[in-house]
Amino acid sequence: MAIAIRKQDEIEKLRRANRIVGETLEYLKESVKPGMTLKEIDAMGEEFLRSKGAKPSFKGLYGFPAAVCTSLNEVIIHGIPDDTEVKEGDILGLDIGSELEGWYGDAAVTIPIGGIGEEDQRLIACAKDALYHAIDIIRPGMRFKELSLELENFIRSRGFTPLLNFCGHGIGRKPHEEPEIPNYLEHGSPKSGPKIKNGMVFCLEPMICQKNGTPKILDDKWSVVCEDGLRGSHYEHTVAIVGNRAEILSKP
Image (cartoon, rainbow, N blue to C red; front, side, top):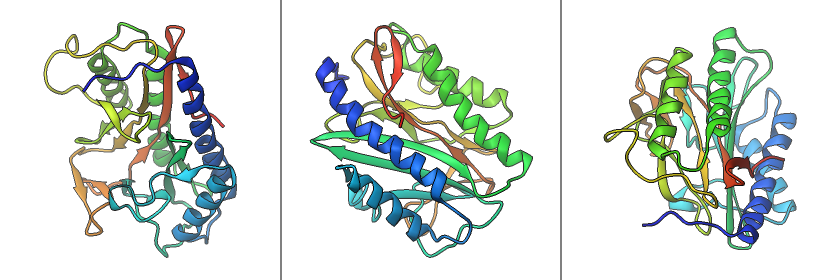
């Protein structure tokens, strides 16, 4: 399937859907406190998202039961909200999707719950910094595989490793479109595969493990952890290639 090239008015529609995601994440970052349950956090996120006129696109997507992926500590992505209370020293990944007038938004952050240790600070910073490094260097003509290699090299330079078998993705009229964008190089040379072009819109989402990037899916069939059993982190933005650079659409 070809990678869609979006017109300016389509990018504006995607920007509106994504801005709501960014606003919802900002609201949750400011609101989440120790003692809240993951279900309460999910309900807060859904209510805020709907108050802005959007629908929670994750709810029911592929059977996912909630509006917000709440990925606590060792869970890196796709955590299902339950009655677990967050506590001081935890780290929590929040991944949210929106749908507004047939266009989709998607972004994620990992946040500290109260004070956290230095290693957890480094873990969160790796995901965030890898994301912004990738956004900074994107230019039309660069291949997606080159971008994947840049992400991998950045993550490994910080002493961490990317989660395998999960990736960033295109987005538009569907929540997941072409291309797939792993956080590591796979299948051949970085000088192969499709090139980034003006008008493309996609999600970049570094997913960080500490030692072993092999994924393991828990018994709930959704929560993804690393085989090493250690804490992970996750950051994501939706970007559009406009004027020969990557512009973040999912800013609040």
